[in-house]
Image (tube, rainbow, N blue to C red; front, side, top):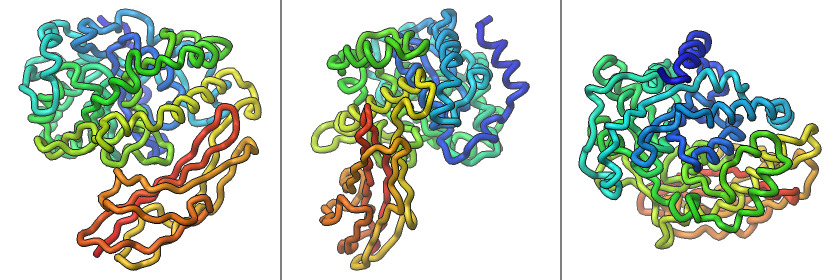
Length: 443
């Protein structure tokens, strides 16, 4: 049948529930990719961030654009082989990188049935939250990919599972259906853990899920278009040529495009363990964008419109994200830790979440700010106004110090205020570390 099914069966026999044994503070992720060329680019970047998440599954699927899928090609296998070649260098810079063997063991193929999506491409503009239900998985066959999703969600682990739909969501739709019909006692517990980040609805699964599985948190990202997709970052030709493709190891050499064109990358940016806590709530905002609840469903979110711009919450981080990617490409060939740059380290004094009453003094303190490479660092505190529910601005007089204090403002109802401590080094490339604080103010 499909080439990865054997790998899936062998790997699952040895590594069933392997996710339970990794670092639980890191977000748990399942990637679904339809294998489009920009997915190839996103996957190369994603593999360099597997140290910052808990990879539970990588599943090849199809979409209305890649209707047959691409699992019959070896693009993904070539990338894992290249990752394996640079792995010994990568772990010198971060020991949390999973082995290529582990990634192979959690890789499988999901739904790539052409007939499911053959008539949907013409209706792609109708595939938005609240759209008509154009497919139902009731009579579909299970796949290794859908069964893997079922397996992960049934684990006795309450942590959220971030399912990323780089292409279509049909494989997840089948998994949710199977949970509902074959595991009714566990169904609600299982699907309530899911946060599904959709790069558009690239098949009819999104509209099916939001209606038939309303406990699933659905994030609809349309803001990738114009920020991360084709023709959005055409100033990056030199960046890709010099910092990715050439002299950066076997993985970077496989990067298929000439400039940054990774429409699916925001899906995994959202789940990165980088201090911004983007993944904790769609409204928080971070590298993966910021989202607001729709009026249509309790658990469906779409791009936030910040200052009249629905792309701002993604665009504001692009330079910092690409700098971080550049550093990780350097890790692929830097045989010594000292031969590449690494982001600063922040240690906090006290709690990052605090609840206070209006009129109380609030103090936020960084116990220490250091840089592993000995680089000079600058730091600043700033209020992420769009992320909080308090609509005023806090005067941060000590924004460049390690500690800030302010008097909790007067509020008529309980409100939240978000502050970001951002630390920037002067290495090459310049890298950022973050810590988000959320202050809840009661009247």
